Amino acid sequence: MADDLGDDDYFLQEEIQPENNDIIDKKIKTKKAKQKILPKRPMGTYSDLITTIRIHYKRSKSQYELDELLSIFNSSISASSPLTSTILLDEYLNELIPINKWSKQADLSSAPIVLIIAQSALRCIELGKILKNSSSSKLFTFHYLFAKHKKLSDQIDLLKKSTTLFNIIIGTPKRIDDILDANVINLKRLKFVLIDWNYQNIKQQRLIDLNQLKIELCHLLCEQSVLYKRFFKEKAKIGLF
Image (cartoon, rainbow, N blue to C red):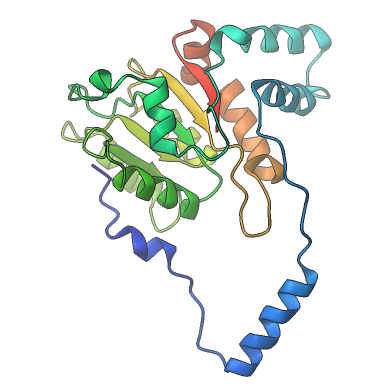
């Protein structure tokens, strides 16, 4: 079940005022002229994540502290990557977790098996639509965590309810971090943290190309204590898709 955000399409609507057709045509031509076609990027790897963390903390931590931090993120908590760059999210999830495991009804409220980190509310909705339209849609019960059109306090109140059951969270780094700070998510069942690393927005930017999101991602993975403990105990793995 997706959370009570209403129709997903509402979040995908662009808030654009009607414009003259000639002006629109000119804008389209201008955008096409300015848009640079970037070379196709290789798929992200776990070592790319380690490099990102290392660079981010290089100035704020001593070499000893950095080595100690990175020792937690060793290969033992690296999940297998998708077999191909065209694999859909639902197919990747079924690669990681057998269908018979998904079929078990969640008996704990607000207790995800998978945490998916995406760059924006719109991208979260897109990923949710993939799961909704999947042949395994009945197995995937998910909950959105992002700031757009949703107050943090309202999300916290919803997650406190015993009737809030799901096995997947799809959210943005900062909102997930804030929710974990509120201690309303049960991570006892968490097995995978999946980063939507390879997706590029309309400006051909990945999550990792946006500096603020990169900072928030590093904080979530390395400084959010309840999540960090799962990695430290090797109870959860990290995957990039």
